[in-house]
Image 1: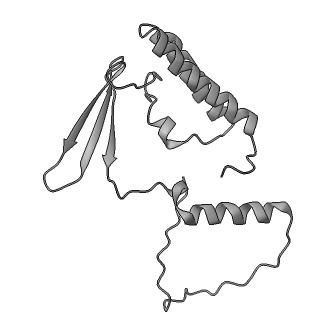
Image 2 (image 1 turned 30 degrees about the vertical axis):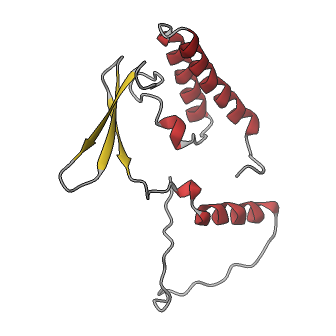
Image 3 (image 1 turned 120 degrees about the vertical axis):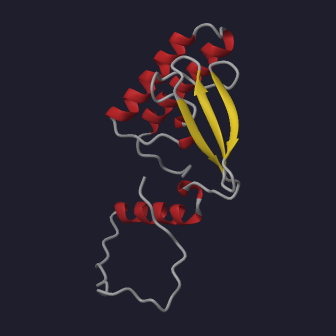
Length: 155
């Protein structure tokens, strides 16, 4: 995905706001309001322009008060588990006490990091370039002789 990005300038602006929020908190940990303003502005811009943010960025911003979640500074992080089930990371915002639960699964891979997603992205880029190919007729019933191991999701 490092190739040709459609709205590169907009993503650079979002990245700048996210880095500015981090810099504000690293220089003065008491200046949470300015970092919150930067995160709020970043989220509003992404929402207005219908841009998808990376999940690693979305996980570090509180959904309720838009403050930057830094463990030990603006958030507490706890490891929890249920009997016979998966382990979880619970992040609690210190400003609004809103908690966010994240699954700890070392085998889990985000869809955008899977090879199938990269192939779909490349095919979509090739189709948008203008290569007009006739659509192939799909049968009404899928062929069950081949094992389908790829799962497609939309986010």
